[in-house]
Length: 264
Image (tube, rainbow, N blue to C red; front, side, top):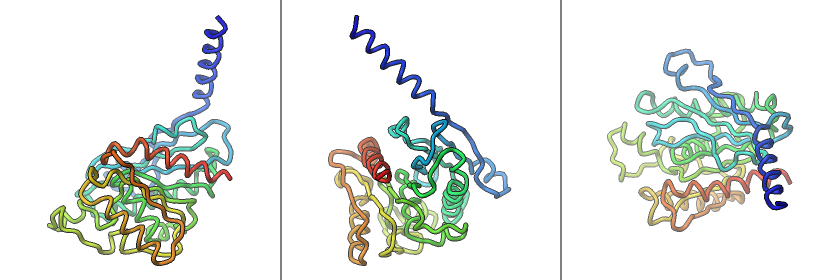
């Protein structure tokens, strides 16, 4: 009887805790006025009512830059973290510079508005999986994207890309008539923008034998180049036994640990 009563109390407490959280859907973040922008450039916000000075994770979905919908990293729900899931315009309807601009504009919107949801603007972490990881890397390393919205990329608490492409993205290369297995590094490659003074960046990839193409090796090369130019805050994690999609679940643990480290 006591065991049953205890379980009931714990269950009720969990429900009440969950009820403290709310999700606001489809918040427009852009001033762009064309129909496709008005359709896509929205975000969802998951926050705790009455929360204050909470860390924030801005999450970019995957899908090869050609598909996908905004999502919230489920494993961080009810963990004292504000989550922001972002949609952006997709290739080939737009060129890659437009997609990167969308990503930057969404982060700038979060920086300027998240305090009203209890967020701490000094604890914003940008993250995402696959294509979202690529966008995360580009915002971290090429400061012009956020800079055009008056935001210093170094003002973010950190960047945590999941299985992001470090060379020029394959969908962008396809639009140029370049094959998936023909690597290029140009201004749309995170590797092009290696720099010493980047905020903390956690590179997370799956098993090198199970990942897409050379995704592990790309990230490993980026990590090595960051180290050689004198950056001391970039780390890399290879999640053995996990493929491109399967690495997300254990990857969330690394993201959560990084976010929690901001509280100290």
